Length: 161
Image (cartoon, rainbow, N blue to C red; front, top):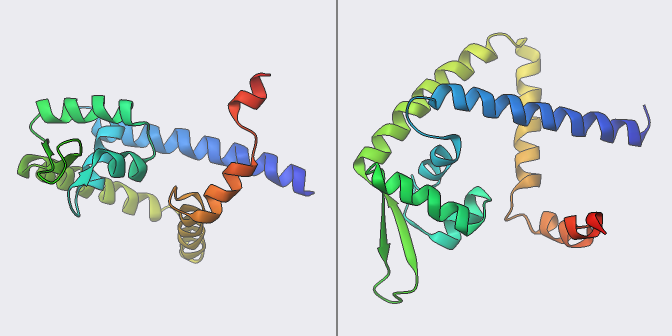
């Protein structure tokens, strides 16, 4: 298989995995919150984040994040406050209810993933885990190598011309 065929296969695998994983997440969260809302809760587990930090952490545009956080606030799962040192900076934190819901969803998710792992031969589990960790590092929006690579790539504006 040449490099072009590998690239095509890898792109197709990424697309399928992304769709299937999002479907898995939607089915798990169907009665409570959306997948993106869950990502926000997860990102806030460690500490409160500014809206800019949070948008960068989960990889979405700040205007989209604002709508998500507004919905989570209405559900009493997050809280927005302005920093005393600079009133223009909005910080988002988890409420106790938000942390409790995330922990419940996380336990459900871990249970389902453990069952999925049982379907994979033991010798392949480690390879899959190491590969997923490696790919996560590569695609991390804070990875300077990725950012430099993206600066050199074509943008959607280039494709449309």
